[in-house]
Image (cartoon, rainbow, N blue to C red):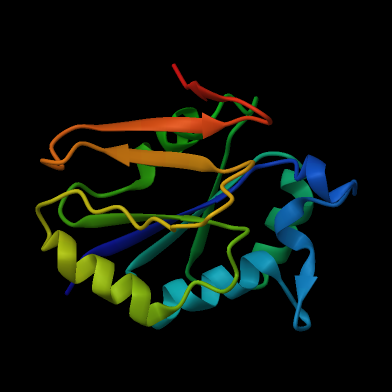
Length: 164
């Protein structure tokens, strides 16, 4: 599969981590969370890796500067995921597949991403989701039985509300 662009969302504050350090710079196994995701993107041979920075942009971009083949775009102010993607669109080509990853998901595997890319077949939307018995604090994906219409919900404690 060719013409794979990867956009990594790395603009969040990480409020729940109770740290002034950008969430994606916290370390796991001796490397920043973001570095794990970048390494996975490079493993699938993405032609372009774009990192969206925001909170602590200077710190995150400093980490990126030492690496070749990466591009960053800033999301200022942070107005949500859709707004973040709007910042990346101008630097993306329109001739392939764009894979959007979260910079704080360091354990995502290249094999999982390659399977997702195979599923989308360069022409379909494909979503990677997780089933968990306790989705507190996560986005919830709901599909109709026909899989034709989907609704994203945000689980708030303690009640679930439709996100507009």
